[in-house]
Image (cartoon, rainbow, N blue to C red; front, side):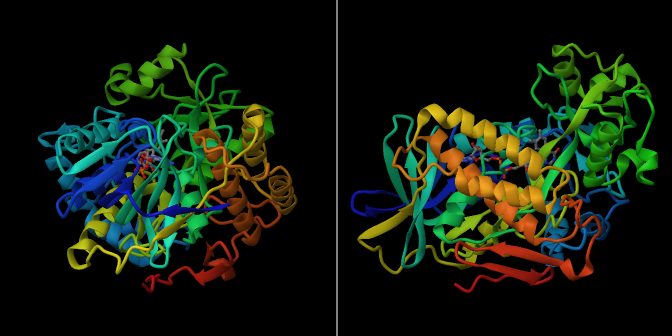
Length: 534
Ligand SMILES: Cc1cc2nc3c(=O)[nH]c(=O)nc-3n(C[C@H](O)[C@H](O)[C@H](O)COP(=O)(O)OP(=O)(O)OC[C@H]3O[C@@H](n4cnc5c(N)ncnc54)[C@H](O)[C@@H]3O)c2cc1C
């Protein structure tokens, strides 16, 4: 449903940044060097996927490492779908961005005065910086939030939900938002930067917090931007599996430090699935656990830390230790029950190497964006880095480009999809999550994907203007599920995190990326560099 908005009397800002994870906070700070920034976020500044990141941030800063090695690891894990130019930017510019975080006060753990580096799955070197053991995201978020709050050029708007983008003849002019009071409010801006994170919440089992409902992807798509690589959702192999606990992440770094996976019979099974055993790429470990659980008929496996001294466990993984203890598992003495859970969206709003989207004046960075850097599978700890690097590219872009429209039209359009019946919302949401988990989970096939698409088209509750965040979130999740299923159906092969039981092998003719626009789909070779022509 498109609504028209008069542009008289609306709030203006130079830059509008949506989202307060690493990408939004960092980009807002950088852009404030040029002009006033308004930063909008749907809960508090501190709530984001970023705040829960544990393992750390990858960067080739050690003398025994190099951007070339980081490049090779990222490309290998991305399974043919990474855009090489985007990966080069990530690994070459990453070390400088991480040094900037250090100078902004992020207290990375150190050894002999230098950042302590750990190794995670599929990295050929120890290159992961971490903070307070396993609370890297919280520490990054804390440092950036502090600087944002103290920056007089950044206006902070918490508890405001972005419901739609405002569009007109020259592209994106800003956003339509819902305030806590239920009032709608429009913000006009010279550039809108979406940093709204991922969409793990469309699955029943996810490591993502409840803000991760794919809103940014959905509003951008409705407004005319392209989404790409939507079939690639990464499942984290090891989320805590206890009936009473949330699906708390047990970081990859635990396996990096020597944690072993065992089935319920106590048998270590990863060596029979892959030569790198517990340190194989994420998709392989997740699928292996899934297959092992199918084989034994169990709903989880175990992570065994008995090779690590209790003191080492407590100092290296204080957050994991405390959280598991809270739920009755002492990980210095017992194995941790774990199972895979939806974790990271490789796909997202298609951007070029400057964070530009297909819609003029709309930019994106962080997990909501997809510059092609992660391909079919993200290398562990590359996503925090990606948020910084693409955010910085947006900043670089505005060093040489002016920020204005030739003129403001009298009316703008906002594409909204409201939901009707508040009574059915919880059931609809649970049904959606259950269906998506079953048909778009670790193993997919044509029949299931078609069934899901059919259900999504038939269960759509129509249009209404009940503008409430939870209704809009449900509609956003439906749209994202539909786009993911459509892309997964199109890709008739298995590659990276996308595995189809009816096409279990990779097909070299599919070294291609799927771009979905509202009115068409484009399929391009994986090395095509997008440079949006505007
Ligand atoms: C448990 C866990 C552990 C992880 N560990 C690591 C790790 O060790 N290393 C690593 O590199 N990556 C890790 N990741 C992934 C990484 O944390 C995320 O990819 C990254 O933090 C995304 O940052 P972001 O800024 O793009 O989005 P987020 O941090 O998710 O922030 C998105 C922001 O947008 C806001 N928002 C969303 N929708 C709206 C809306 N409609 N209106 C207004 N605001 C909105 C949200 O409230 C939030 O503030 C982990 C993820 C999880 C869940």
